[in-house]
Structure formats: C-alpha cells, structure tokens
Image 1: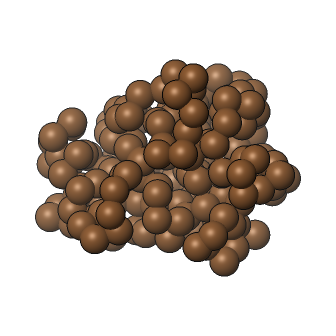
Image 2 (image 1 turned 90 degrees about the vertical axis):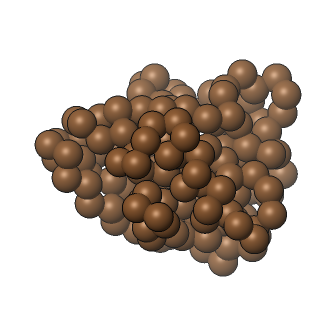
Image 3 (image 1 turned 120 degrees about the vertical axis):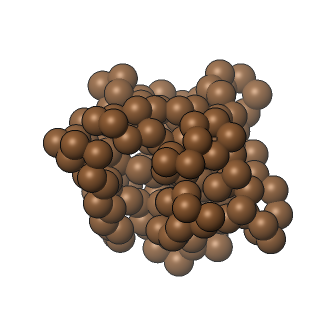
Length: 165
C-alpha cells in the first residue's frame, strides 16, 4: 500500500509566505508526493523536494519561473496505477476535458489525471478518466482555504481523501 500526497498551487512567495506546517507534515508522512505546478519559485520547489526526501513527481505551472527545470507533463506508476500530472494551464472553460485528454494521450484510458491551476478541489470522472485537483496548498486566491489530496493505492485500488486546513 502506498500513500501519495497530492498538492498544487503553493504560490510561495507571491501569494503565501511558506508551505503550511500541516501540509509539510502530510508530505513527510507520504511515500510519494505529486505537485501539479505553480510552486512560484525555485526555493519552494526545493523545500517541497526536501520534505519528500526526493520522492517527488512535479510539473511546471504557468506561474513557475523559467529557471525551474521540471516538465510540463509527467507520468508516474505506483502499484499498477498510472498517474499523469499536468498543471492544466489555460482557460477554466474546458479545463476538465483538457486535463482528461492529456492523461489519455500520455498513458491511455486507465490513467488518473492530476492537475492544478483552478485552485478548486476536483475528484470526478471525465470520459472514463478520473481527474483530480488538490486545490491550493496555501489557500491562494481564488481558494478560500488550504487544501490537498491524499491518495492511497493498494494493488491497483485507489482511494482519495480531501484534507483541509
């Protein structure tokens, strides 16, 4: 069984002063962490990576500096489950379809898509693809609170829990 912390849209330092302690604790407790973009700085990326002990899959968000060397799409397989991570950059209109399409193109119809960008919690299925968005780990606007997801993968079965600060 694997525990995966899923976070996005930290926006440190432009909208928050740091990663909240409770989020840091959840990341440290997890076997792996997914960050779906908008760290906002290389220092925030390095802080999150340090918390994970290197077990981090991350992607570039639209607010990340060009010096942050992470891909725009990443694929991760854990216990037979494939996660496709993207930020979901673009208009809020069509966000769900865009994210689901990216996952399908990268890994096929059984992938789970993880994205950020909208700062809204999402756990839904679009055209057979499960789409997850952890909201904003720092409660950056337009979010009204700090949020993240924790996924538990057990031999291909995935459960997802929403955590709020």
